[in-house]
Length: 98
Image (cartoon, rainbow, N blue to C red):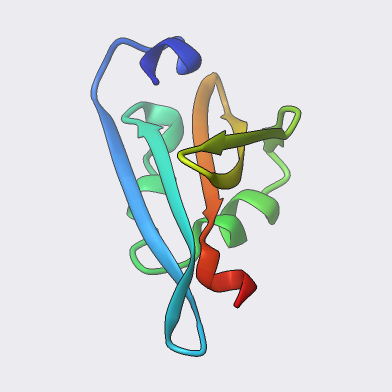
């Protein structure tokens, strides 16, 4: 992942499951480099990451990529915060379609 982000330093991985009717339906994993650009992002606590990413005018998103890993469909995007790239991946679990 560090190759995708073009970053060699320390990263924080954020993993969450989004629930629907009490069941995990989406698994999300974000890789956030620890830089001066991401200090606020790394301190959002339980606030949804998407809420911060999509409501900040200084954060841009590269093209969305569709991926399939072990028969799970997902999408991933690179967001740019200042000079730092952040990877956000979401996988749609089979329980979403039941």
